[in-house]
Image (cartoon, rainbow, N blue to C red; front, side, top):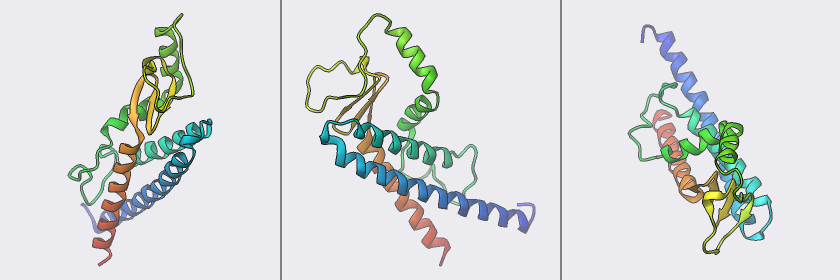
Length: 169
């Protein structure tokens, strides 16, 4: 650091970012909890909660982007892995472009959307805009396990709690 002032600014920014990450984790946990409550209801609410969960998870992933942020501890040395989620995050950020491409690639074929297929066999997930099979979320033909993403968020929450306890000693 060039000055003590810069160090203070970095630490204040870190505290602000960590607080926002914690808030987004709280929102993601609530959305996931609501998702689990509605998953067996065979209603569209489960998609609503799944999308909210993914939006908050996307916010978390953006906030821990190491290319853009400084943290006094290393996210990259922890065992939290949101890399698989990054592709889904990019899909959601560019939803209109992805939807255009998906429809163009499948023009004339059957396309499914908002299907709850838990327990089904042979569902053509490759043709689904959105579908749910338990905690597996299919988006534009790709499969993402929401439980795995949730588990990573819980690990991240624990990591941040340990770090905050350490700096508050």
